[in-house]
Structures are given as structure tokens and as C-alpha cells.
Image 1: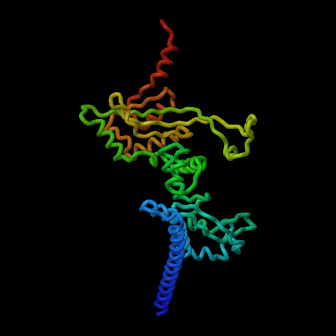
Image 2: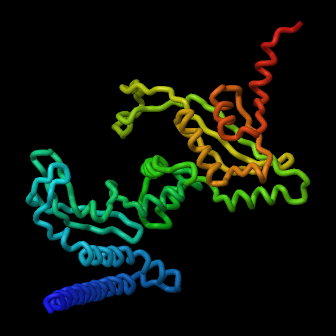
Image 3: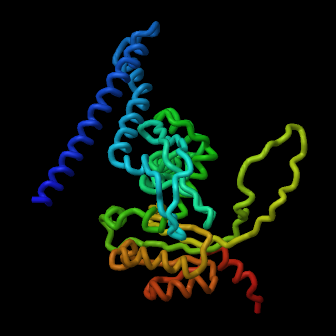
Length: 346
């Protein structure tokens, strides 16, 4: 009997929260419709469907942000009203220090939250439980915005991507921020994340093989090259002065070797690109990436004739023999001609 009473109480509580949530949304929707009406009935009253939809689009972010905030209140209300929290480092029980405001930019609009802040004097650590519960990005622009910007930046230059992103989404993002966001997204990617699927590669192989007697030639080109890098403390912006010679940077960069590979099909005089992967990485990391591709079936030697082109560096041929022992090894023309030039004439 007691258990049934508890279940009924919990059910009643959930129904009350749901009812309160819907009532709040209805009130906010009425307010938004009033504001929209004032805009649409102004002196520049829209005419035509495009003008009507454009007018609504410009006002929709306000409504969507309100809906999202009401949903946060419904699902995470306990975090918004939290008075005490446990320090994640030492386990000490802490009292709320302040209620701090934060504005978040999302693809549906801006959301402003006021969440409790906790600080442990023993550990010197401050934290916001709601931020962790909502899995918020440390940036003002949240992960949905970052993902959309990264997808666009992959297709066009950063400056053009910035212009298109602002036009299409209504969210401003400079080309510098877009560059940082895209680079940050790339830090967590593996070769499989940027590669075509096995089905897509097989489809391209079959297209090249159509009408031919022999299996298509798949080329795996591997190489390494030194690239200039800069330390993390060199990033950031500073004031500059016009008509003055720039001062020498106070930081010292370094040269690091980027290793990688490209895979493509040879179709007569045409090259059919499949994938490429170049990173500042060592031999073991290159080999691990190639192994991932092989185990995923992206390099299927039963469908192609595999050959590997390299410059003669020992690390390339060692990796190839480990992973693709039957592949044909070919030295590239430029380095081969260098070696031939060094051979003394008899």
C-alpha cells in the first residue's frame, strides 16, 4: 500500500511539472506572437510569401531560445536551484557561492541561463554542475554551431565559409574562430572519421573496373615532410600599429615532421581520389591508421592491384611489408632519378 502511494505521488508530481511546463510555453508563445505582430504590422509591412517567411525567420530565434530554456527548467530544475554540491576532487560538501549568468549560442537561438557556482577552497577548484549536466562547450558557441561551421569549412575557404554561415544561420562567426573550431574538431578525429565508407570505395573501384579485364590499380603514396609549427602560447591577438615594422615574435617555433599517405585509383590518364591522411605523427601512428583502414576493409587487395610509391625512406617500406606484404613497391621518379644521377659512369 505504501509503495502504491509513493508511485501515485511521483506520478502526480510528474503530471504537475508537465502541466506547468506547457502553461509556461503557452504564455511565452502568446508574448512572442504579440511581438511578431508588432514587427509584421509595422510601417514596412511585408508583402509576398518571401517577405512573410523572412520576417518570421528573423524573430524565430527568440522563441526557440525560450522553448529550449523552458525545457532546461523542466529536465534540469534541480541543478538550477542547487544549494549544495560535492567537490569532484576531494569530496568536500560545498555551499553555493553565487548564481552566474551565461549566454549560449545554438543553432536555434541564444539561451541565457543563471546557474549555481561552487568553489572548493581546499582544492582551489570552481565548477558549475549544470554545465557538466548539459555537456556544454567551454565556448559561447555550442557544439551544434561548431559542427555546422566545421561542415561548411570543410567545403570552402574559411573566409567564404564565415560569410555563408552568417547568412544562412544568422549567427556571426569570424573566419579566425571558424579556423579554430575546425582545428579543434580535427584533434579528435581518426582516419576512419574522414574516410569514405567501404561501400563508397567499392563503388568507385567497380566504376573504374567496368569493361576492363584486369583489376584496377590502387596506389598508396606515403611520405613525410617537415612543417613549421608554433607553440600554444603564441596563439592569440594583440594590437598592431600601422606604418611600423612588425617586431620579431617573442616565441620560438620548431620544425616537426608530418607523415601521411594518399590512396587513389589509376584509370588511364585519370586519377580517382579515395582518401588522404596527413598529420604530425610518428611511424607507429601512421602504421596504426593504415591498419585501421585495412581492418575496416577500405584497402581490399582482392579487388585491386595494390602498389606503394615512396621516396626510399626505410620507415615507409618497413610499414608496407608489415601490412601489405604482396603490394608492388615502386620508388617515385624524382628520387629514383636522383639515385641514378649519383651512380658513377663506367
